[in-house]
Length: 173
View 1 (cartoon, one colour):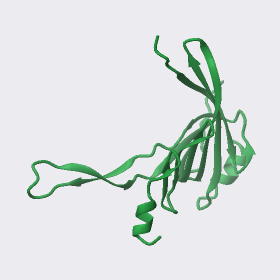
View 2 (cartoon, helix red, strand yellow):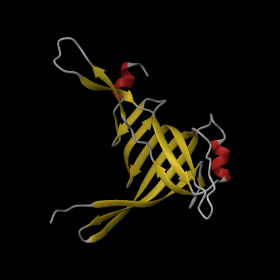
View 3 (cartoon, one colour):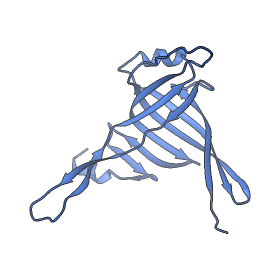
View 4 (tube, rainbow, N blue to C red):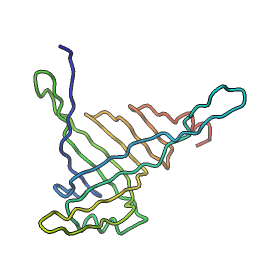
């Protein structure tokens, strides 16, 4: 039997500027870093290729279970960035059952792109959605920094290794 490990995350908590929002969000979609590509088309080459040229903008989404003062008072400030932390419990299963539980922490500095709105449907929860523009993102699993991105400081670290150190040195930053 292969020594496989299955990771499961089925619950989390959100903190907005340090305020615990336990039970107030239904769903969170963390940023998905994506390479910005530029097509190389040059004379003398048989084909073309996409080459990395930076990173696409980072975005996140939160689905709220209702409207909340703490969220609205931050969302109504269109030029202010907020600290958003998502903390989850990742259960790790092996063929013998649950083998460990480790913390997953996502930290973002983000700006609300629009204020949460809602619709009312009889006998249903009035959910609302927030889209966030993210300028800083750090994902830590079991105490290990998986990725850290700081758009304004030209920081992009994977597994703690600075991927832009040479770039910053070359541009004199």
